[in-house]
Amino acid sequence: MNRFHVGLGVSGGIAAYKAVEVMRLLQKAGCEVSVAMTRHATEFVQPLTFRALTGGHVIVDDYDPANPDPIAHINFSQGIDLLLIVPATANIIGKFANGIADDFLSSTYLACTAPVMIAPAMNTTMWEQPATQRNIERLRADGVHFVEPVAGELACKTVGTGKLEDVENIVSQALGLLTAEAQRRGEERGTGAFPEKGVSIESNDPRRLGVSAVNDDLRDERILITVGGTREAIDPVRFISNHSSGKMGFALAEAARDRGAEVTVVAGVTTAEPPEGVRVLRGVSAEEMHTAVKGELERATVFVGAAAVADYAPVNAADAKIKKEGKEQLTLELKKTPDILAEVARNRTNGLLVVGFAAETNDVVGYARSKMEKKGLDMVVANDITREGAGFNSDTNIATILTRGGEAIDLPKMPKRELADRILDEIVKLR
Ligand code: PMT
Image 1 (cartoon, protein in one colour):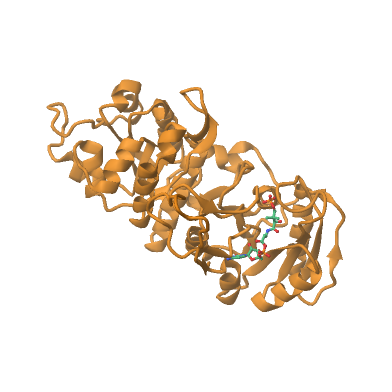
Image 2 (image 1 turned 60 degrees about the vertical axis):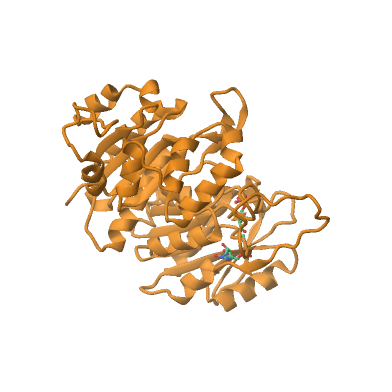
């Protein structure tokens, strides 16, 4: 089985040293990694570090006499399955978005036909600049994948969004994209490390972590779960979203993992940490979540929609920040987002079990039952989000489980992790 080949591009930010860890994790997962750096990146990390660990020449400059390949940007870009940029500065994002090719990495991007994934890291003000956000939107429209930076303390001692996402998450998403692309092309591809499962990374693989399933009643299941809230852009700085933390969906992922299932999560915006031992893909908007789910569905035996997906998104996200001067009122035109859960249920094949959630504020069971019928679900977990200790962002939940043709199961307040097991018990019974 062919191994995946990742082109790792490193640009010049303080987080450049974390690219070494990304490279190491990709190698541990069985990928072959070739490294390219911008000249500024070499101010932070020596090319020798990457050369020693990959055994290959690290390209900074096409025209360097030491470069063994005279047309390296073409050969490098054509031989890889993924171009992964870690960290990506505002400058390299700007060059990619505008087709500027004035160094090795930007020329490689232009010459690349493989998928591209970018993990930005920068100061919050630079991240929030309309120019940066505009460039990101343009690249997204061009099909580039982003691993969004997270909030935290930055090198400049300020606190805000701009910190590089955890390296494990970056690698997990890169591996997820490689597998999804290989499946789309109908290829039998793996990393060499865990060929029987496609791809995984060491720190996220339950067998390597020593996480063993005590009750492995889900060992034959491949569970796909949507988690968290979605974010629908109004303009480069504003969005529509909701309060979902991802705690409920991640609790389900963890419980299913512990019961022996192979778990893939498609997460929107989350504040909770994903559990180890599950594959995490990101789909920040409803549209992106929809695309990620479609790419994963074929392998799944159970689908659970725990995400709070926005029902509506702006018809056209503005390219530039909307100015408030002279406007006492602003009307947003919204369009319906794809109903992921309904579509999954409608197109199900091969005995796929489809489970939805219902976040309601009144007539909870009534609305939940009608959702189950209208969307053709096997099960609905209804939570009354107005109750203390239930719904968004709390560590506990209060739910009623409805199954097709079954009695309503009213559950008292309990930790989300415990509720996750109760939901999985009902899934096992439906089998
Ligand atoms: O993440 P937490 O902070 O832990 O909070 C947990 C939770 C409250 C988000 C969770 O328990 C929950 O109820 N999730 C579903 C929230 C929701 O959007 O409910 P809904 O009634 O609007 O949607 C019904 C179902 O359709 C859900 O399974 C939803 O994932 C799905 N849906 C909705 C709209 C859409 N466009 N696509 C969908 O797939």
